[in-house]
Length: 138
Image (cartoon, rainbow, N blue to C red; front, top):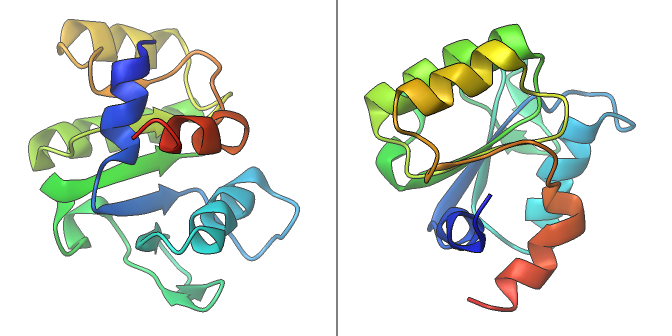
């Protein structure tokens, strides 16, 4: 995972989080709150909830105002992640950050087969741990 990909991710004008919920203890919600705490423009993506942490949600990536200018944090199980990657590729999402546990062998294979290695962060890095350090280098 290159530092350049992480910088690309955090340089976007807006962000989306897939995997946040009403459960405050879940990492998806913690990632959403990380963006909020830094006053970054963030949209939660959730198939059922209309609002999370006081922010209106969209049901899918294609409903984002500007998907091609929105970096996406993914905190879902690998089966859901695979579909999100396919949708993100079609929408020309600039960068995606797969939180630990959001990928499996099929997801990694998809990333490599579709030339997305320079746009997807995966394999362990966590935005909650690394995000502020990367932002300080922008």
